[in-house]
Length: 141
Length: 147
Image (cartoon, rainbow over all chains, first blue to last red; front, top):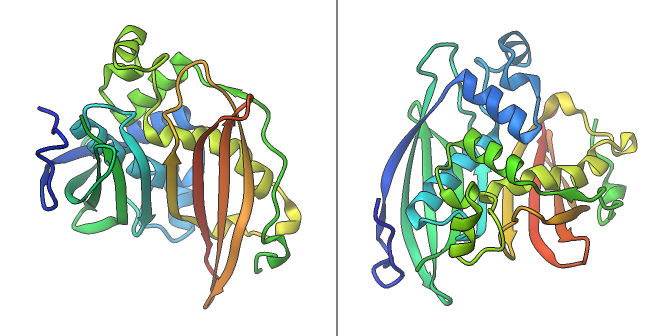
């Protein structure tokens, strides 16, 4: 992917959409890397006992994937200065080899000083918005 | 059980110092599929103007969780964790975290609010180096669903 320059990023500029797969293996790996071992992210029996449809992804993993969507676009994991989301629905991860698909899209909403732009991101899984108010400030070259 | 609103404005003890390592950054980058060399290769990170490999933006949760544990492990707060979900999360990065940073995190309860049968609690956690440099401000809202 070629990374955008500040000059070409205008309000309305769309980020190239991306899809990421999330499998049970990814949840176990994220649990270890993050230290979040909440059982609803790996134990179907307990997830269902608290009213969830199945094991769900960590909200912070969904947020991290949206962050990766932004930093891959910007070409620098250090380019995000402000980043916030609301977790509107869980990503449900079935016990199969494919897992869940999370689809990301984004639009530049504003040009800011210091070569920075405001970006609004959408994240969907299985037709449902899993993040809302997902907004970031990204510094471009 | 409602969350004890007497804790609004309370600032908790900072966490023990946490040393950000290259290995942990690479492990986290692998776990989220972040492909950048800047998270793995010190020479590439330095060529891009950073002191060492940098952490992806949401790595800050690993550090802020150390401070917010001081809040959530407090039994007097009255949270029922079986009913809690993560509602919102925000990070203001004053600069990226990088390998070699030694940081603490310190949480303040900004607000506790009853909305119908739900209670929300917003916590602000400051991540600072042990020398006092502000690195990241993390704001987190937990939602306790009514029983």
